Length: 294
Image (cartoon, one colour):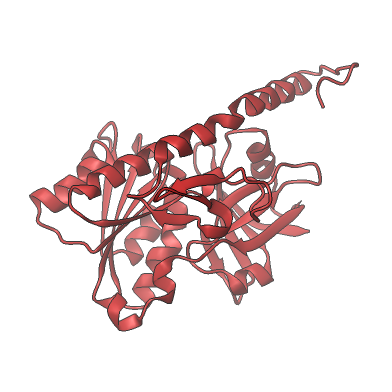
């Protein structure tokens, strides 16, 4: 069992937890993910590692309460435990294995959207620890949904905020902020890394394409099994079928078929809606006597 050591609500419905998982903490690298189950009957939820401390033996995850399973995870309190916490899984970010001298000559721009801000943090921190410059754009609908801003400011060269309603920072989408930095301010970057909602990553990739900027995206939201067994995370990259969990989760954003990926992401929506309806009926005291709530 994996004990919850720390818990904090970062924004409405978005929770950070530190989980006691010494083996995972010692092996984790930026870009990797874990598979979490709240209890023995729970769904397998893939979550990118948001932070880790090898000495203290904990791994940080950030979860948004969207469906039944994520609500179960976020309902856990300090001192309670998760049934499973498997990882680290997936391939680490490619810069981890790059030649240090070559890497230090590069300048990175990270584009983070919503909960995707959390897994950006360990990547930027790792780069800073290795002498690599990185700017960060964090996007959200409104300032109340921004997370990790103080931590990110401490490790990024420059932190830019973009909110849809203009309540903080740049008013508009993260793609508008990218154009502002490159086209208007003359900033130069060698690599862009985008992590966030699928639609955001699609349009970040379209925006950076016109600047011929190498762009990496993370597709961890597609995963179910996490080990390549189920095939639910199939995605087309450069005309070839790849499995997000074993070949990724990071891929060249200019080669990802985002429309296919978004269709695949929506395949399970009806199942989630049914699970939500059953959970609501149970909460209201309803007991099905013919087994339809299984």
